[in-house]
Image (cartoon, rainbow, N blue to C red):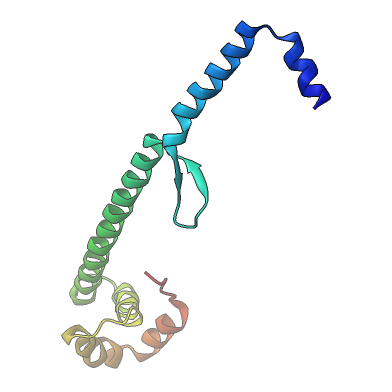
Length: 136
């Protein structure tokens, strides 16, 4: 306590009063903003941070929504390529393999097996070995 007493002894009563008021003002400003997160850690609440988190959630939801729509569009594009008889056969076969490797089953699969794979078995097998489909 000798160090603390030495410091307090050098300060005037006005300076001590100012320090106490400053400490009380800082505590009054920050204590209402102290919160706990989901893990129990203390943090100082910031409205901007909460707004950013909320905005991030809505952005992620909208990106997921767009991804679902793109998935549907990619299915339709693959189907159009498969049935388009003006396209080169290899492109149609590659689209057919992508369609089937993506796990889609419908009348299109039976069309692929009966028309394309039956007419061009070597090219179909080659496309099946080459094409990799990413997980969406």
